[in-house]
Image (cartoon, rainbow, N blue to C red):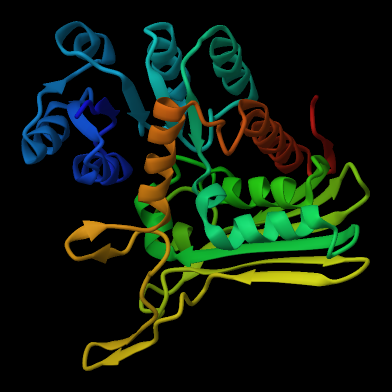
Length: 336
């Protein structure tokens, strides 16, 4: 059976997850791990019995590849993604598409010229709960959107691990920016953002603890997006998150704080992950592996992406406006 040969670029936490997902999929072959840091790169490569390369160019020269998964830090997305597309490789790019609007536009221009498939890792596009929410709004059952609220609160260890490398509104908030625009079907046109810093500074770490973003959408809907890593790590769930939309004819709410299993043992109380990437029968399942499965279907069966490059660029435009609002302390228009 012919399999899709994939290189994972970036051997950090998510890169290692992607290595495992590719290795466990019978229709794919993990062909290489690419990382400029030899220790982490070799370690991940040896774990899966594949070669390590310091650069994507070395991997392309030395081994046959069909696709790449790009899991390097946000600020490195542009160079490696454009290199992959120019080499004719299909690309699954971790969210956000790029750390700047200019970078996102550069990738979009490269994708436009390429025949390669591109899937941006807005993983919630593959979550059946949010897909149902989007389909319900499209059906007209909720009527016209009036206001929307999205929140995503994660344990503080996430902020500690991030160490200020990526702004919280980019690292976590990109999910909810995309959800608001995708589910309502209307782009955000204006934002006003503010932040607070108490927890991380007390630990000697850069970055903020929370970002609150008010937004106005093109269709007149207003909304709020609340992003924080202030949860105690002892919380039963690793996520307290919800999405609410109020319309002229109804409402909908997606609550992903608990995922259906409530576990109380001598070790404590937990609400285990059952949807995103639970380990079942020794394999990773759920939405994250489903994202890769859909990527394979795009390659094999010419299926359209569940998030277009233009939508990923739209999210980057909102990130750009949030940065401007935080700098000026005022409302900022989303640049078109």
